[in-house]
Every structure is written in C-alpha cells, then in structure tokens.
Image (cartoon, rainbow, N blue to C red):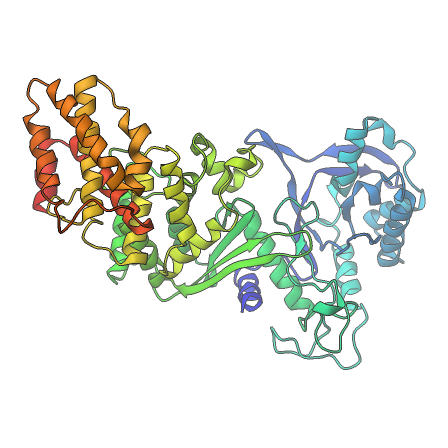
Length: 584
C-alpha cells in the first residue's frame, strides 16, 4: 500500500526521469578538453545562515554500503579525486571503469574531456584546491562533485551523454523469465538493492526495503536474493518520490528524529497547504482566523471551492535506523474526514487562557515541550517539530527531549480520532507534580485526554463550571481559592510549591492543614468576606457522604488540576467575561 501510493505520487508529480534523481551537489570539477583539472568550483550557497547545496537532476546514486561502486557523473571526492587514504586508488579506478564503459566510442567534447580526465589518473594538482588539514580533507572526500567543461555542467547540455546513461540502465542484465512486479502488476526485471532514503543523521541515508540476514528473507531465498518482488521502475519511483517529499519543506515535518511526510492524491496543492498550516499552526491572528473559518466549513461538510473533500490524503511517519527505516504509521483518509479529525482535536484543546500567540491552535511541538524538564520550551520547536529550513539548528540536550515514540503516537491519535496515548497524560501529570506551572497547554492536554479517553464531560468545559459537584474538581478549585487567599494576605503564596503535589494525590492528609492556615490568612485581611464565602460554598460540597478522599487516581488528579486551573483563570477574568462564560 505504501509503495503503491509513493509510486502514484511519483507519476502524479512528474519526478525525475527513470534512472535519474535530484541530487545536492557541493562542488564542480572544472576541466578542459584535455581532461586537466583547472579548478574546483564551489556550488553551495548560504541559506538561513547555513550552507545549502545546489540541486541537479543527475544519474541515480549507486546503492553501496562497505563495497566499492562508483556513480556516473556525480559522486563524492573519494571516487572522483581519490581522497581516501586507504582505498582512494581503488575507488578512482572504479569510477574510471564505469565512465569509460558508458562513454566508450562517444565523440563529443564532454565525453572526450571526461575520458581524458580519468585516463590521466588521480589529479596531481588536487592539493592546490583542498586544504591539507585532516578536517578539510574529510569534508572534501564526503562532498558531492559533478563535472564542468568550459563553464557548462555535464549532464545538462550533452544529450548524447544522457542517452548513453539511459541505454546503459536499459542494457543491464535481465532475468530470463521476468517475474511479476507486486506494485505495477507487470512482468519486469526486479530490483535487488533499493535506493537509500535520505532521512535521519546517517550520511548515506537508510533503506526502506532490504534484507541483510537470511532469517529475514522470504522462504527459499537468501540475503543475496532480491528483498521483495518490486520491479526496477517501481523501486526507483517510490525512492524518488519519498526523497522528494523529505527534501520539500512544504511536504514534511520532523518530530525529533522521525519524519512525517504528507501529500494529496494528484499532487493537489490547496489541500496540502491547509494540512501544513494545521500541523504547524504558527500564523498571524488574521491568517489563523481564515484557516479556522475554512476548517469549520469543511468540518460541517460544506463544499469549499478550492478543496475536494473526497480527495485521498496520505500521511507517512518514518523513523530512521542504521539498517533500515521503520514505519511509525501510515494513514490514508479522505481530505474532509482528515480535517474533521484535526478540528475535533483542536476543539478538545480549547480552554480559557490569556495567551495571544497560540490563540487559535496549540501546535503539537508545544504540547510535547510540556512533557520535558522546565526550560526546554524555548527550544521545543527545533527539537520536536522542526521546519525544514531549520533542520540543522542546534537543539536541546538529550535529557530535555520528549519520549521518542510519543510524537508519532500523538499524531496518529489526532489524525485517526483514536484515544490519546496515556504516556502523554502521565508525562504532563509528572511534570506538574515535579513543580512545573499549570499553564494553558498542560490544562488543555488534561482536558482533551479526560474527554477522549475517559468520556468526561462535566468538568471538561472551556471555562469554570461553578455548578459541578465532582469532588476532585471541587478540591482543585478549593486549592486555588486558598492559594489566592494567601497571596492577598501575604503578598505572595507558598502553598503551591509546598503542598500542590500532595494535595492532588492525597487530599485527606493535606487539606486540614491548608484550611487551618487559611484562618490565619483571612485574619490578616480587612475584608475577607469574598474569599470566605467562596471557600464556604466549596466546602459545603464536601460532607460525610462526599468526604475528602484518601487518595486520587490518575483520572482524579487530572480533574483536580483542571479545577485548579479553571478557578485560577476565573480570578483573572474580567467581570463581563465571567458573566458571558456563566451564561454559556
């Protein structure tokens, strides 16, 4: 299913031709007609304070691990310049043999220059262009190079060379009786080693389909046989499509080391752009309102001119490993249903707050940040939900990172409308019990989990529910009143730091002490009537039939925290707004 969808994506968007691919290039080897190295021209540009390689459509990269196998017209410095102390000569010879076999009997200026370059051996003047330091040599060896003759890049201008490469690919040995490709349904030559997917921190990428042990192979096969019955065209198409998606900042986001790619059937830009805005909603207030209005119309089932609600939409979350890539989840849905699931998630997160930056939507990265130690929130977007042009930004240290699996699990629950991962709920509670503030994001997550996972409706309101008699919620409100009373009496409050965690977990043990303290705090006020009346109203809901509980479970702790947050926000809400919330 995944491979078929990616092949369809390749065909819809008109990716690089078969046996070709878009490749990032750092340098060009400037040679003359006799193959002499004249210069090494830098092609990288400075983009967002980091170097960006120039992209060319070049022959596809040869799959290799520890073996020696050159790539035509575009390869690293160890193959084109022999920059490998141990195997430089072997790699240069591999590149020479490949280029001579493909360009044999061709008589064009480009072909003649490249043949002459390789026949002359490793350039003796390469030291003029590469610094002698070990760091510089290592960087030069791993960088990608192409050829340039008389200022023209080889591969762009010479149609004969392009035809020679296509003919070489077509002439590779085929099986006597080609099997059936499981993707295209056609009899064709199978691809034994699939191309690499450029994701994660591995320099050469990782495999999506591979077999490196006989125990992983199909019955009767060994690791020397093909990994799957996928033809050469299908293998090339899915690798090209996936790499294009991962390179395009408009079609992917990172969650830690995991990569999320998304696309609409037929390459429709309008649907893709709306999903992009919802996945990473950092917008101006006006733009956010437009997006919110559009999403509301789609969720109601209204036809919106630029969107096709029945169009298929694909989301693929990948986790890179050294050997091969793992699939976190693959979700296929109609565009309209997908938007409804996302809107439902944001509706659950809606809660009374005083923030302005995230007035409409709470981004996933901001939620994940709240599961980490205090102080990492400023770096959260770089660490957990990174925009493509900031992929190399230095991020928080490992102890502040969210759980590796949590981001993918949360996204999957949002997109499918399933229950939220309880690891998210537990992580938020843990941070609060450790002393982190109960802010809008933490309260919104608790509210959402209580609604979706525990079917709670009485206390999961946007603002304060003054009529609720649910004891954990009432106790949370009572704690907020006692905290506010101490602030008014002393100018500051200490019960939040000293007693909140124990009051939330074991109310029966802590609240008698807090109530005794509140008597002294009231005595310091000239007019404590307001707080005493509010305290009395809440205590009236605690009686012999509904006493202070000895302990609260995880669900009860969440309701306690939600009551505390609602009551605290209520204190800072204007009178007119309070009346409006009550009337609602």
